[in-house]
Length: 636
Image (cartoon, rainbow, N blue to C red; front, side, top):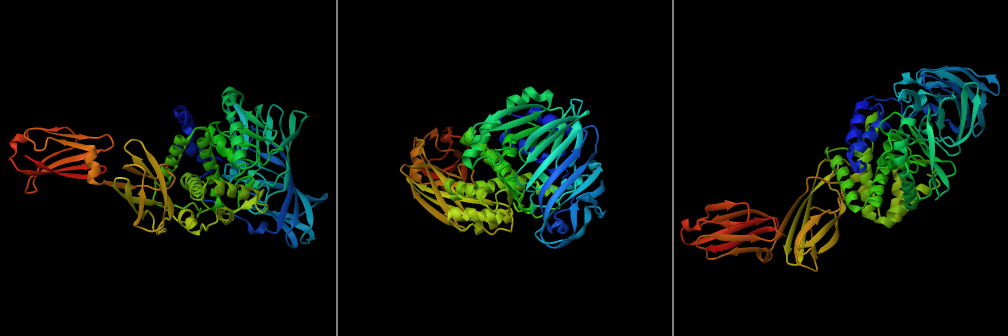
């Protein structure tokens, strides 16, 4: 999705992009800039209660545009069913649009407008449950809405036009019902534009018909779609395709001619990502129409149903926008408070691409990057509490990154089988499929499949703010370890983050064991006996849990330290040698006399020379390591 940003920023970013930018924050920052669009603005529109009395069934959308002109004209024919007896019908429409006529079966209807609405008086009361239709003829300059929902620009000197309506911009360029409660069952788009260009929209291209110097492109989309996902783009696109055998459909790419070569080298990965998502979840939801990309002028992308508008063709952006076809388009968040159901999923699916195509180490690096972003501030919940702010709705730290790690922690908590089965059931739920969902409906599927309550989890990690910091103390004695876990919280909205924790137990010769414990109270002690002498304990080795500022103290019994540290000669006359094995990290060497006075200190293993200057007697040698303190009596 989408964001206003300086062209220089994106040019600079592309110059310095690294080979694996897809798990770095630079990619996500660019993406979210493409999606916020107008982040500094506070928006008053959320849901119009005046449009709640009817259900939109169908739109015939006839638009006349020219990418050299910031204007639109056309007609919107709407078929709707009355949800109650109604004598008027209201559409969301910005004041920059002018309605010339509203007709019903050839008869003119009276109407009025205000700053955000078109109110049409019906000729008679329409009874509840009755299907009816009307046609609105209008025109105007959509750019003046300030939402950047309708844009004209140039690429390589050639005009280009595109729309981008999320979250509140559809009403800025066409009269519609703009909410997250009513999807349009199907649409036909007839896009009239100069015949030097191609016109792109949702669904299948049915025809292209030349009329004088214009071309009328007819697109048909037969799936339910919210108003914000309907889009058009017009310029001199070059078209090419990739075929997906798993579903037998095409990925159709519409790109600027000057970027054709680079695009053709970047977009084939879409087939691999498509196959991965199909294997993990289900068949592509719109396989009998198409999937595609249309290049446009934002830095990020926007997941319009069946055709994502793309500012570039990086692998991360391709994966993110494709993921939205399931999470955002097939199942759409039912309120902007639940935007993480769109953005958290799309971000996490890009992580799954990294996990499956690049391997575990890159996936761990991806999770570490997300955790660094999430914990860069001590507050903030995944639940979006301010839907008047586009910047908050599309917060990369909370809606994207924390939302994605919330999903990963659910997978970590429930296990792969239960987690992925729950997500499949969520996508296929007849009440949600091609409709709207809110967070409790996802929770229900997760709880049903996992067989446990997730109330505590979502109270802490979804609606709660901040993150935990863990204080780990591991006391090792040979093959035995006692791990004590304490926790502090960065925000007072959460008193304790309950979570399974993983520890990797390491031996001096490369042996490894992994243990998992349920951390439910502060100060819990977890005992484990390994099959080998323990040399180290690593907390959260795969970065599965959101946390920051963790501390780990390892204390190994003296006999273990003595096996790894050689001190000779003892008694000593002139020079003392201290040798430390590779499994132990030396921190400090201190020598005290019988009165407890420090007579020598250093931080590296080596010879301690010139001890002849010390008086004969008993000394205490203290060697501090990452695995504890070794105290030895030294004779001089």
